[in-house]
Length: 326
Image (tube, rainbow, N blue to C red; front, side, top):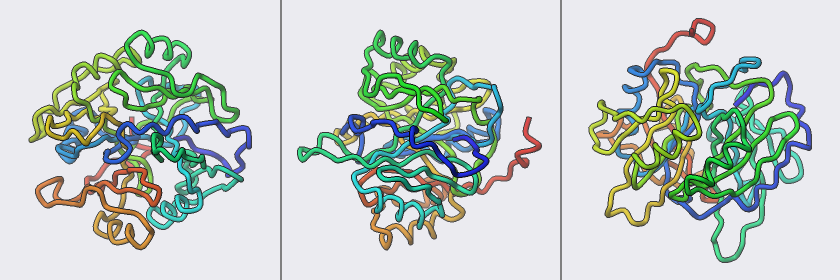
């Protein structure tokens, strides 16, 4: 996300996202957002943590680099929900997020970092649309991205539009139906650095055909699709640009017919155990509990009270302070 000097957010920031809560992959997913500070090999060590989560992930940094853009970096996230009050209470209690609340939306802050927006939208009775997080990757031209998506078998959920005080954005589905956004932020993209607790730290895509998915996203950003050689799980890949792993891509096991292609974001927490203990009292559920044989029990996937999935990660490796990063 991007940094703000204050919490005064224009009401024009509202974007009609009611059509975007597609049922694809809304129930079980895993991470998204880019503030990790390491180069590729440092990120590889992190990706060992994300091995066999049957979902998606993300990583975003916050400090704004005025006028500088990083195509392919995930730089913004929104939640669409049918219960704004329940969502803000849950995420505020879990991550310590604060909110600038309006009638039907709330802007999210982790300290002075703008983490995105929560929108309230009614859901149809047939459950074809469900609450979900949507992550946005940086692109030079959102309208051009729409044409690329269409030409490569994707679809448009929300056509390109300009949002005052934010930028130009759109929401699409890829060729497998996974929902994602593209955005060109006003003023530039966040720099790469290690996320603080409460900030987005990673994002991951679950796909039935990661190579084909990689080919799709390489049309939108200067990605390389690399084998995650440090993962113990086969079918694990990284989307890499500018020497940084921007996202992970995991193969959905053939027998997991209940899992749909999807993206999912992860938030950094100081303690997964302490975070998990808060989930049920706050009205949420644990979809994927910590396991000692997976990332040393430092990763989990949760659902908020409205059912939107989100990942949490306890990051214990040291990194240089933000002001010392290249």
